[in-house]
Length: 75
Image (cartoon, rainbow, N blue to C red):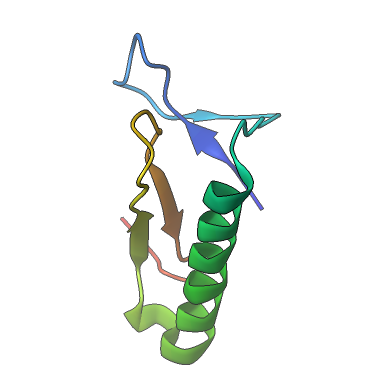
């Protein structure tokens, strides 16, 4: 697994992250966990046809969480 991110001050470049910290209420964590399970199921079920999805949070302040299929080849 690789985790990439962008800084709030400079969103121009993705960087490989060595650590991620989530500060969230239990409901938000459960919503995120459900989203991750749905993405995992979609990757298994659809293979390379499924490329990515973005988590939509009800939180007022929440960074974008995008899951990308590692089996999709990009140029």
